[in-house]
Picture 1: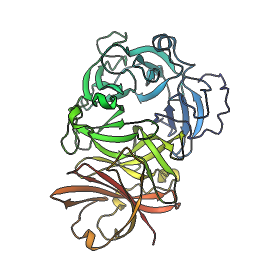
Picture 2: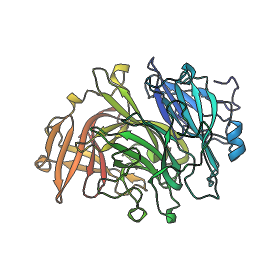
Picture 3: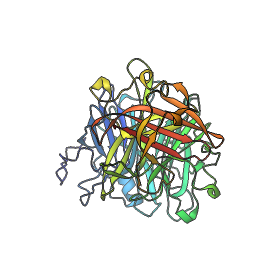
Picture 4: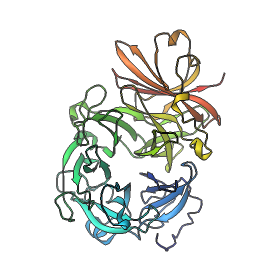
Length: 449
């Protein structure tokens, strides 16, 4: 980290002002969060990618900045005053790299409304740094058709091939193959490329191509889920999912619509959007998510969605949130309606052992606050619904919180899981359900009578 002190007192920032976040965990169990150079209180105090740390993914402290400002090559190419949307990954042990290059950070430089942009690479021996700029990886020009060179996501597929999935707003989402040893695009000898690579998702021109912030996640049983953010950053931002057999696609949503088919827009099920539970804050425009995958004590892994969200009552204010990702019987990812309250092995409030999740419909009846994401581009208030034993008569239990039933001739896949109700500050069951016929996702939390 640089020793340069910011002009603004950042000691109380905690989770606030974290935009486009990504989180990793080091070998000692400390979590590190990297995010865009953003500050809701006015001009940036400084640039170079914000870095936070946490022991539990609940409480954050600002650690500093990864780089000493915008690297010279990026500033010359883009005129950017700050860096955006970092993606940080640990190079697999199977890849021989110097010890001080084991961690890679792909950062973006651009200005609003322009696709004169660049994605650069920095490396470090540890998430805490020191980070060293290695140069530009992908570039784009506003006057040239093609993808916008920002919003990088580095992915290693099941065959050990390395990919850079990128693109934002203009030109759609693309994938380029990387050289595992260097982190640069394969065949470029460390020089920047204009891409574009393989097109994996796009939107029609009449919506200004607003699909961005891609993250590719392996699915249980094979294949990949593609998470992308849609619509307006300050109001209607929301998170959608499609799936495909490879990092390069083709990606389709649960109804079969292709992510590159502009006539089918919008494509993908909305798994997280603006919402408000009774008595709680309005969570506006959640998005630009990454997924932290980490081992669980006793075996298996947990997936945690790391995203930013805005305050519905003051949309300039934004912060990072973490939520559990769960998988349906059909291999579709859904997101908990409640923020993550900390792993149990770290003294947190979550119940993480899926063997203890509901194994039958017994005990699921009751009053639930329900949010349907049938309109991902609006702030949806929860509606109170009472679920009776008769309503549960046709539900099939698959164990570990997984359930299915039939509606209008097609399947609904749901996950019911323990959570921590942030409004009532108490444990509560939550649920997320995907209607495979319509693609609509509904989330809910049970409330006490």
